[in-house]
Image (tube, rainbow, N blue to C red; front, side):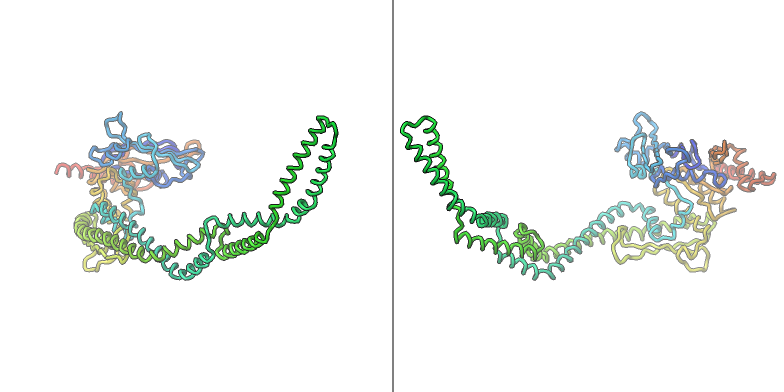
Length: 562
């Protein structure tokens, strides 16, 4: 159960700590006093989306902290223990949820001072608190919400988990099959063109890395051809002249009768140079372009032209033509195998769909069976809420296509008066009747879900008088086993509560300050009188409030004696 809520710098709250007791607690106060801030805080601690605009003016951050005492039988204890969230130093199984919201819009979340993700905080918060919002009863008009009610009542979560898992498999396989069919149809339309392209590449007799090799050889031969005239000048004119001149110089040096050492060295060096020149001329003579070379150059040029033409047609670079050939071979091979793959995928989809239908059929039977028990439980409560002739019909209709929630569409039809036909909720129920139906359903489902704390925000909207008193008694009855926190504007409901909190605000130094006080008996009567009579409280109003309060409490005492 929720034992304490601390709210700092949220909307009009500075630093407010609210202590909650077991059983039923009523929260009242003027419009704008801050009752909704309490509800907002509880929603935030349960993982609701945060908005930096919620932070009090001129403050940098808001902080909400909620302290719970957990019953040892609560399944959430196991989760907290497995994830090391429990306070080992404490023996009272306490759990503190805390959330900090900054002006930058960031959120920090903690469980027992251990940082957690918002998803974890939301999971734990929703296990510890159920918040029935002011307009939540309007969800009853939606068939999806009606289906979820039956699923909660029937404890069908395991079925739902299984059906969702196999539905996702079905969707994934269905998409894969669709892609295969699209590819198959595309290949079917393109296969002739692919084969034409491939034959064209085959005719080119492509080899791996062939383009790079041919291109290099072509560049070398072309360079040789372009330099041929220069080589001819060197080998036929320049080098022969140099050779003749050197030979004359060497002969003259050799004719010296008594050559000195320097003459001998010079002669030797010139002889060496002559040898090097002759070797160089021999090498250069080898560079002469032959007719075979010119023929080879022409062939290489044709091959490169073919490469460039094919590359342009296939929209690839010339060096990638061989890879394009491999790619086309793979596409054609895939097409030849695709029919077999397609048939296999269709069979796999059929198996998944059969498994889905098997689970969905069981889920349909469970929902159909559970619906009769739900109708019985609801019919037992509705007369106590002032609708004695209430009748409910639940239609479980088949869906044409699979969904993540099975193959059922569930629709509620009701009647509140005798001798009138049943119809959908929006055509039969008034606002007050819809609120009472929502309350009755929540009462039934809360017993199933075993949520330790139920928060009702003006669940009594649209009702008054004796019906309001009945609603108050019913909430009090539930509060005997489950903590009930009820924000109300009805004195008949507030009078039934075991504890009564008053939310009020004051202007201090031109700033609005809210406070939450737990009322004693006299102040409770005073607050009931205010709700009954407005600003001016007369003696008659006060007596009425006192009578209302005492009757509510005495009635409880009487029922306890019974």
